[in-house]
Image 1 (cartoon, rainbow, N blue to C red):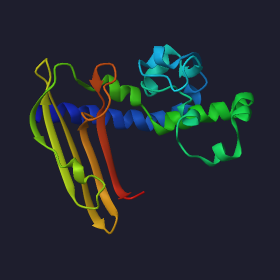
Image 2 (image 1 turned 60 degrees about the vertical axis):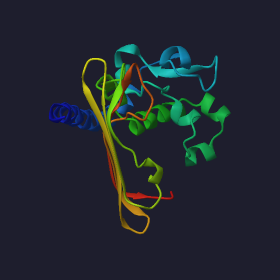
Image 3 (image 1 turned 120 degrees about the vertical axis):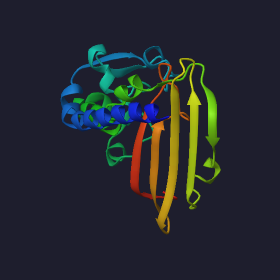
Length: 203
């Protein structure tokens, strides 16, 4: 377990650095795009089947989230004052808004591709230990859950999820380890390094 934690820690430090770097890089990266069908590129069902969506060019694609197109900020369910002000026709005919949407997505999911590449190989995974209190997640009560697994290569993976309330509906939320409960991307579970000191529920 100590070795698994050390490996995750090194990955996390690297990802934090890449995430910081992704913010100034995003306006530059967003200039280099190709158009492709979503499901054929990501391996996940298309939000708009047959519609060509935007992606970074292959050599730069590791900087974007591997499970969604680069224009997901506009087409996905992400509220914004820009979406209230402008409609689809305006978006289609104005490059600045399409460009801004790409930058916003790269900022929202900064360096996600690295988090997937460095993730935990999920093939042949079986549980070693489970403390599942997730039924109380977002309930307003303190909660801590922990999962420890082993994959077909004998590598240990783990996930810690905790919420500690300190004032009414405010809590410290921690998600460390690997996103074992989330989607498998290219055969791997993404690295998780989330710490939100002032989370509020219900939002």
